[in-house]
Length: 191
Image 1 (tube, rainbow, N blue to C red):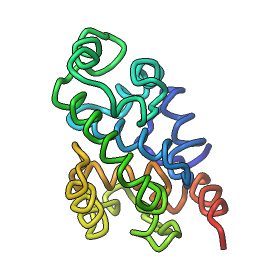
Image 2 (cartoon, rainbow, N blue to C red):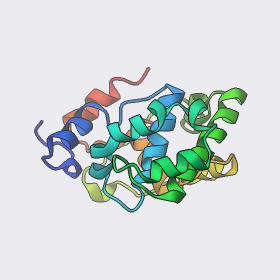
Image 3 (cartoon, rainbow, N blue to C red):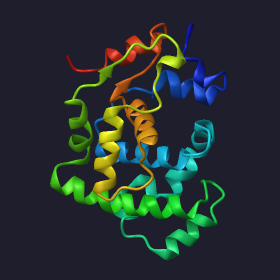
């Protein structure tokens, strides 16, 4: 893909993620929770590290079923801390379990997808950054969503992590203006 966003480099796994997943509007509450948790695990690491371990995370976290994960306790934390297929960080593991419990409450109240998408009025924001320098690390919207998530019990969801989540989940289209994936992703949004 000519003029692809440069952040994905040339690693085939990263390129496929850029071309086929990043920025695609996600409307499934479980899948949104998975993306949020993985972004939280990424904090302080490179995204390629998480991509390389994503299948390990999916296996370790019961397919990112928040109903299952919400019931976990110290035995599961200990199991996950011993699992080399994931990022073994006690705080992030415990945060994922707390976030699963928060997800259940939000899901029962209004649906997690509706909860997330209302922050952009249900429609992806179509940015057109020209260079990577034009892409902010966080925005007023990511700060507002981060504040709401934390208030409702979610963990590892600061404004920068939340903005990366918003980009990955397609709430924001931050593919560069010259990137062919930008138009493809924009075309996936309902009119």
